[in-house]
Length: 362
Ligand code: NAD
Image (tube, rainbow, N blue to C red; front, side, top):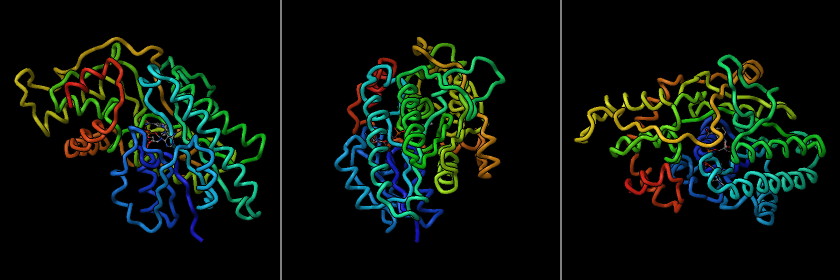
C-alpha cells in the first residue's frame, strides 16, 4: 500500500517544493498541514492540488485537539515537519512567535505523533518516521575558512530563530531517546528558488532592483552562506523521509559557499542582462546596493559537509549556484505579481531595514 506522508508547513517555500516532489516522483499520499501564516501561500501548489493523493488541512500545529483529529483521520506513516517561523530578522524583532511555533508547536506535534504511534499495530509502528527539518544555523558561526558543519558539530545558536530551531531539535532527539519515537533530523544550509517570500536576501534583492529601490546589505556583506537550490533540498528530504535511518541526523548542503555581497552582485548582473534598468538614476542595478548597519549577532560563515547523505543515500545536488540563480531570477522576473500579492496579503510589520523599501514598493 502506498505511504501517507503528513507534511507540516507545506504551503511554505520549501514545504511546497517537498509536496510537489512527493506527488511527482512517488506514489505516496500527502496531507499538507499548514495554518497559512504570512509566508504560506497555496498558489505554490497549484500544479498538484487536483491530485487525488493530495489533501490540505488548515491547522495550527499548536492546536492539539485538531492535530489529534488529523492523525486519527489520515493515519500517516511519515511526518515531515517543516512548519516554522523562519526569518531571522523577524525573530530579533518579535521572538515570541518563534518560541510559540518552533518550540511549543514542535512539542505539540511530537506528543500527538507519539500518542498516535503508541496505538499503531506492530508493522505500522515499526515503519513510522518523524522527520524534523532543521537548519545549519543551530551550529552558530564558523570563524575560519576551512571548517565545515557536520552531524557532529556542537549546537551554538546565535539568534532567537536559530535558538528556537535548536530547542526543537533537542525535543525531537529527547522524544527518540526517552520514548523511542522513530525520529530523524536534517540540518540544511540556506535555500533559494521560486516561491520564497520576498523578505529573504535573494527575492528581496530581485524585487527591490526591479522597482529601483535600494538593495540593503548588512555590515560589510562578507558573510558567507552555503546556497542550495530548493528543489535539491526537497529531493534530499524525500529521500531521507523514505530511506533514512531512525535516530540519525543528516547535514544537507550545496557546496556553494558565497559571500552575501557576491550573491547580490550576481543577481544584479543577471538582471542587467535580462531586464536592463530603465530607471533614470541608475544604469546598472549594482548602483542600488546600500550598506546598512549589521544585524545583531550576525553569523559570519555557514558551510556544510554533506558527505553522510551523499554516501549513505546517494544524494547529490543537481544545480550549482550559476544554474540555480539563473532559474530563480527568471522565475521572479515572470512572477512579480505573486510577490506583490503575497506581500499585500501579509500584514507584517517589517523590520526598519525593510519597511521603507516595502512601503515604497507596494
Ligand atoms: P516558510 O516561512 O516559507 O514556510 C513556513 C510554512 O509554515 C508556511 O507555509 C507557514 O504558513 C507554515 N506555518 C508557520 N507557522 C505554523 C503553525 N504554527 N502551524 C502550521 N503551519 C505553520 O519557511 P521555509 O523557508 O519554507 O522553511 C521551512 C522549514 O525549513 C523551516 O522549519 C526552516 O527552519 C527550515 N529551513 C529553512 C531554510 C531556508 O533557507 N529557508 C534552510 C534550512 C532549514
